[in-house]
Image (cartoon, rainbow, N blue to C red; front, side):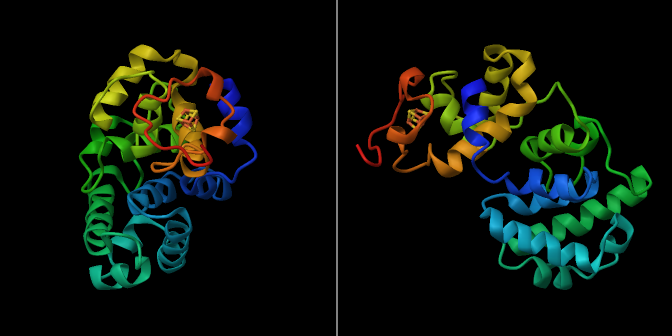
Length: 213
Ligand code: SF4
């Protein structure tokens, strides 16, 4: 994990961490950017989040926007129609239940429309500095299995298995390290094992074809 972290420093931060760093860990921006980021390239998420926040910065003002306007602002993120509705409805709930702030418990976050465990855990880690959370997305799920850390079929299963398999001090950083690695090196198709900083430690479970192999 230490080697992965050091090697990942050569690359740009993933979009949610970048937005958080630029806006002093603003929990609302982290929440919305994470909601927009599912199955979407970082550059597309970044542009969409900037356009949306230029129009409305807080939950109350964003909740007042018509869904059609949010759709227009966040296009072309994937599933932009569903995400626009979820963002508007989540903002309404933040205003109604939490005084326009982003809650800091998994239970409260998971009650927001469009927020699953991946989003809730990332908000806990990046915005609320939780040391007790692991955020598992497709990159973390894939690489943890290739490395043989876990043997799982679904991201939620992977999250629970990683709590058991990985030293607690690395929990909040697993997502940052593996997302960076998954975007650049351990790609879904054609992982670049010849460039990998941990190739001597990796059993490459389930890797059929490697780039440069
Ligand atoms: S050696 Fe290959 S499969 Fe293993 S982590 Fe590195 S890129 Fe991924």
